[in-house]
Every structure is written in structure tokens, then in C-alpha cells.
Length: 165
Image (cartoon, rainbow, N blue to C red; front, top):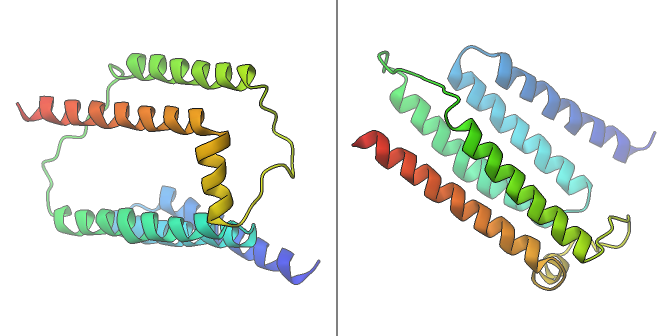
């Protein structure tokens, strides 16, 4: 066992333990702080895999943006006691239909382009290689993901607007 393996196991242990505490902790502020350690552990694993761009994006987007927003939201609204939390299965049918249609489109593209996942074919590490792959080789899947995110954003705005009225 070399140093690389030891560092990987340390990051894996940090990620798994902090993710376990995120789910099991009753205090939501403590849970959000454990989420911070989870995100850093995942970023450390990305660094070990040689995906420097994804590791920096992980830290900037998740730790710098989303987690801080969650912490501020939790710390500013933890005094509210009369919030009704409801879950329903009404949205499950459209969500399932959307996921099935999206997966059918991705599988159809993979079959039509004879896409195979073989190790060693995708260059790793630099943002130039990543950009080249996204714009040239995987442009259809990249565009489909953009359309899926746009549909999700429109759906979220629609649900939020409907509840305000």
C-alpha cells in the first residue's frame, strides 16, 4: 500500500462518515456543516483522480455557492416553527415520464453513434481536453442535458409561482 492509496482511503472515509452524519444528525445546522466536509472529501477524490477542473468546480459551485446559501437560509429561518412540510406523489408521474423520455433519448443517441465506454479513450486532466470532448464528440448529449436542465428550471418556476397565487 503506497501513499496514494492511504490518501485515497482518508478522503473516502471523510466523505462516507460525513455523509452518514448529514443524514443521521437531527440538528440541521450541524448537518449542513457535515455536508461541507462531504463536499471537500469528494473534491479531494477528484484531485486524486487527476480531474483538476472538476475538483475546483466542486469547491467553487458546491462549497462556495450552494452550501453557503443553505447555511444562511438555515441560520436565518431556524426560528420559524409553523412551517408545513408536505410531500405528495402528484409530481411522481410527470417526473417519471420525463426521466423515461430523457433516458430513451440518451440510449437512442448512444446506439445510433455506436458509443462504447472503453477505458483509456477519454483524455483526462485538462480543461482543453474536456472542452474538446463536450463541443465535438459529445455535443448531442451536452445539448440534451442543457434542455433537461431548462425543463427542470421552468418546472420549478411554475411550481413556485403556482404556490404564491
